[in-house]
Image 1 (cartoon, rainbow, N blue to C red):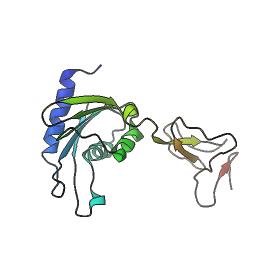
Image 2: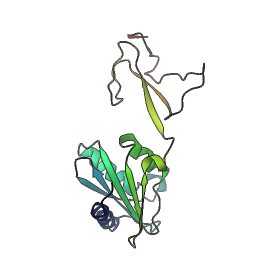
Image 3: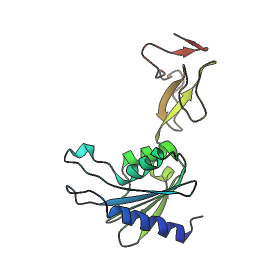
Image 4: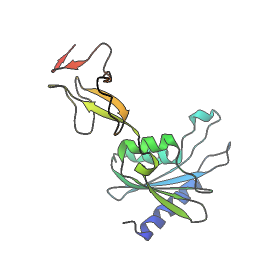
Length: 181
């Protein structure tokens, strides 16, 4: 259950972060405030660059600040922009890496807001499905251990019968039955 006071606090922090945006090329300032599961809030603003592909969105700035501080679990993010623009696909995917169940508040500069789940915004996200042969390393978070391999596919999508995907492993290496080849 979303509490109005919590939403207003996040929107307020995202609005303040928006004021620090560096957007000399588009003039489109965005602010974000990311709430961790432990109750901390990390802010971010968009930062543009003359080489446009090197710009970064407010959502990812907030997330990267939080991850750099050691946070890994998030419950809610507020994003504020003129007109209440939705997060881009790249931001949705990066947020999904850590918090598939994240609540996303999209607000405009006038105070109107909408609430979504990340699942609603990115229903068939790209994800890592870990395949571990006997004796191959890896852990429950999907970090690779010695000999582990990853199989990438859209979550909830399974390969067709008889059409498996080749594991991604080191150059010339695979893991079968605990032995590296």
